[in-house]
Amino acid sequence: MRSLSARLLVLTVFFVMLSEVLIFVPSVARFRMTYFDNHLAAGHLASLVLAASPNGKLDQPMTNLILRDVGAHAVILHRPNGMVFMLDSPVVPQPDVTFDLTKGNVPIWIQRSLETLARSDNRIMRVVGPAPTEPGATVELLLDEAPLRQEMWNFGVRILELSVVISLTTAALVYISLQWLLVRPMRRITDSMTSFRQDPEDATRRIVPSGRHDEIGRAQNELAMLQETVRGALAQRARLAALGTAVTKINHDLRAILATARLVSDGLAGSAAPEVRRVAPRLFEAIDRAVAMCTRTLDFSREGAPPFAPAQFELLPLLEEVGPAVAGDNGIAIEPSVPPALLVRADRDQLFRVLMNLTQNAVEAGAQHVRFRASVEDGVVAVDVADDGHGLPPRARENLFRPFFGSARPGGTGLGLAIARDLMRGQGGDLALVDTTGAGTTFRLTLPAVQSHPASARRAIA
Image 1 (tube, one colour):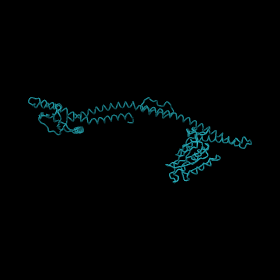
Image 2 (spheres, rainbow, N blue to C red):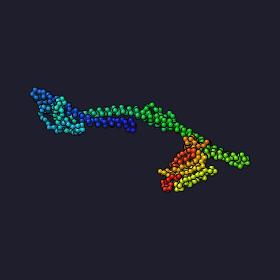
Image 3 (spheres, rainbow, N blue to C red):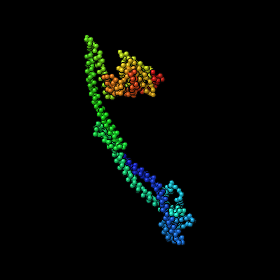
Image 4 (cartoon, rainbow, N blue to C red):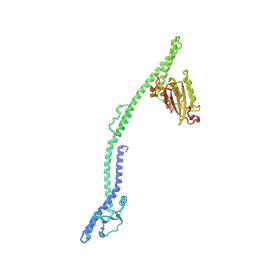
């Protein structure tokens, strides 16, 4: 019963049979009423024979013959003018129950039908109903209940047999229809997914849409697009992995070459030639930038996130370390507006690296002031890093956190912000650009807050 087709077949048969059962009960009640109507019509016709006789009487053998054809012990016709015509057997039994067909409703008829089916004895029924062709006249019959019960059971068996045939036929048609419209297409989609999972890079394992315009067709189209997207992404990932390996090897060799160049250039600083001493600082700076670029590229291409060593510490001392490390001869002013009691839980070295990167970017953007502001709200510590530089160019804003695309200066790799955001997300936080104009740029770092804070650390510091 694990097959969808088998379940649909069984459910179809079950629901058809349930529908037939619901139809069977009122059908049996209607059959019982029809049985009474037919006997009343036969009894009325028999009483007309008595009324048409010359002396208004029939001999007993003829009466018995008529009553046998009617299936009754007695037939009584009551006319509106008060005349009564009666045909009865030599021994008329006493009625056990009376059914007046001029009264009652469908629920009562269903209830009496079920009572008849449930009994096993033979009651004498007194049935009273209107004459079918004589308005105002009433026919009264004395009938045995056993023949009625037998007819009702025979009718029920026929209904059951017909229900079985209808249910099996309906189930077969529904099964074939669903198999063609639903099950086979779904199996095709499932087989395609299984085959694609085994070898996603094989282009021949992509499902070919059937061209249907219903939900199945849409599912096939979406699956085909998804498979093509995944295959392209895997191919790009493989190319990037190969490229990353090559870049790593090249950077390793290039750093060795640059280290040699740095050693050689150190000797130029003591040269007697004034021209050499004049260009030596720029040469040192270019070599240092090249080494830093190789280092950032290696950090970004390293597989896996850097080790994360969380610790709880005060934020202000960390911000105070950033100023001396960056200011130097740049003349930039660092303003850490953070309360001393504000605690954060993060990797101290990684957070320092992120703050250093943002501050150095501000220096390169021509900023003279960098201000750190912190606030705590809804369990999150937000640190804003604002500078008064010339802002980010449009190209840098569009590709801000994309490696090799988001650099704000010529010759940059764009890796600094990408690595910084990865470091923040690795600690459960994030890095985002808040605003950038010609008057400055503001970045926001977010970190999960420490559970208990002093009350003074719960408000933003202006």
